[in-house]
Length: 210
Figure 1 (cartoon, rainbow, N blue to C red):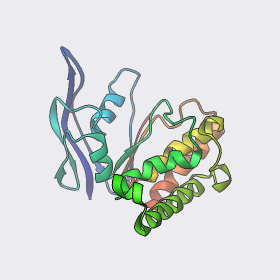
Figure 2: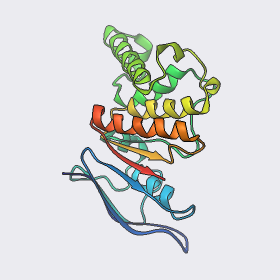
Figure 3: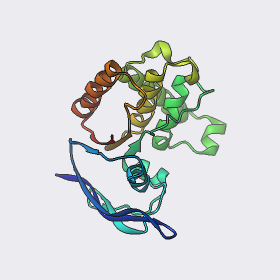
């Protein structure tokens, strides 16, 4: 069953066409890959899927809803999460806080609640921390890494942290932009097995760039 559909997506920057009428269907529970040389427009295509770029033409459909041109925060709420080719973490924040950033889109607390901190807000914060810790366990970092600064993790663990942050948003679709870039063969094999675990244990659909 179709989960995500890109219909003739096109992205132009002035007179330059970076992506030209690309269509793609991602089925529920599937893993698919975009493969091509540098400069082919793969990351630009991802940027359209995640709202960083608004397509010049075409439509993006998620579960039969037209979500074309919505901003990144709205698309995250709808269930699209991503990682980046160049790791983007908050280096001077803890590992746990990085994952909590990914959970923010599911929290209902507003400014007043954050100031007054009623019991419902405290409960929500506890649940968010529980979710974040469970994602750290799932990606293989564990609670012991939670208080460390993100910048002190190894390269491979930073990759896993970025995935944990994306998973904390409860996505339906996970987009991975060259997730094995910079890894040695053993790390690549481990991450490949881990991607299958994400699909099999969390039931996500995964689209990746290689």
